[in-house]
Length: 202
Image 1 (tube, rainbow, N blue to C red):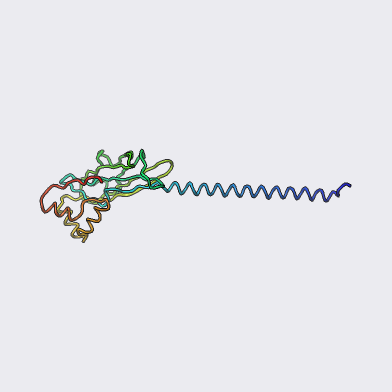
Image 2: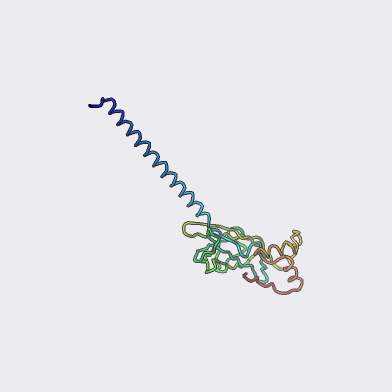
């Protein structure tokens, strides 16, 4: 017995509506997976980081031609050192007060097997200097800033440290954190009239 025309049309319309609903559900799930993948990608991009090993709050003595080297370590999202990463060191603030060991204000150094890169700083005149450090690896990027201060003599550095109330304890804490010479050490050197020794890498 033939079905009424209205019944056939209703069945066809119902199938089309079901198809549209299923298609919309598939698109929604695909979009959710895409957004989730982008979010995970963003998390990975922020995983690269630069750890300052030595140089922060460093004290450079001009007349002794000594300076605290800037040493950094590049680590991935698992906090493991990464070798073969180009690291750009650039003097940003107080650039006229110092140059890098290349004789320029910017240098690129590739991290070694331990994930470390370093540059030496040649102090020219008194004042604060700021070294910006940038690294890029597999689409990820990281940045850090190292601040140091140039003094004409060790005696002036010791006097500035005493005047700021930093004291030996604060200076020792800075040195222990990978910074430069402590105020107490500078004062001792100035009092003894000896040359300032360049701090060794850890």
